[in-house]
Amino acid sequence: MYIIVPKGTTFRVEANIRNFPSFGEETGALADPDSNSIQLYTPAGAASGSALTSPTKSATGQYYQNITVPSGGATGTWEVIWTATFGAEISIQSIKVRVK
Image (tube, rainbow, N blue to C red; front, side):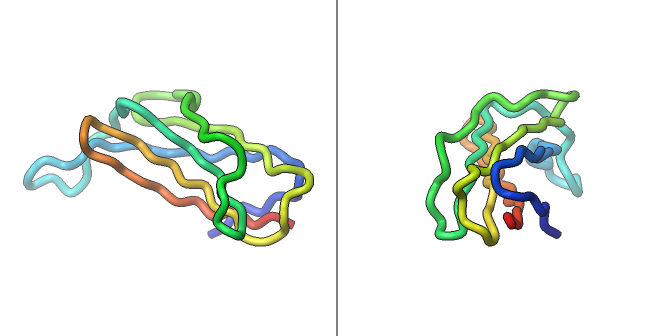
């Protein structure tokens, strides 16, 4: 599934962040990470701007970030990489964005 956005517009990505499951658990509980890093990448794989590190918290373990695609950006499939860190453990989510 892709988010489809025109160049120069702002879109929202959301993340439900869970801690790592304990033995016997299927999934971990929603939890607040020690840190977040959200980076937008161009279709060529280059980082677009600086990583965002202060997403808005909706509830425990639930965050969102508004991101703007540059008006001069390339058309194609962009990617948002959301990295949440719990101590030495890292959780990574990838969100595809189709820019037209």
